[in-house]
Length: 85
Image 1: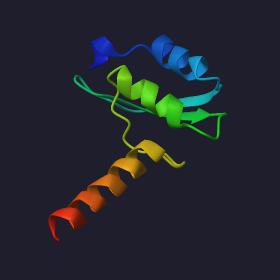
Image 2 (image 1 turned 135 degrees about the horizontal axis):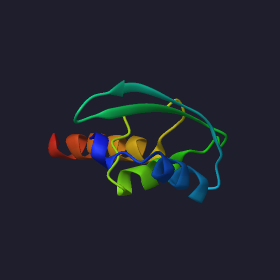
Image 3 (image 1 turned 90 degrees about the vertical axis):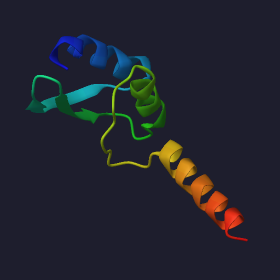
């Protein structure tokens, strides 16, 4: 929520993953939710996304490959195939 949102923490997470914060836009600001859009310099965002998740941020979407989610999806599909045998 609003009390938990810290723009300095967002910037610190980005910079600690060797990326630069090029832009930020707050697209939704409600009592229990703050939704922001970030433009970052780094092409490989996986480590940055993982760090946001570790800090409890919910990553809604990204425009680059998220190998963590892709791996989970692949493993889920393998499990489904195994269970259907």
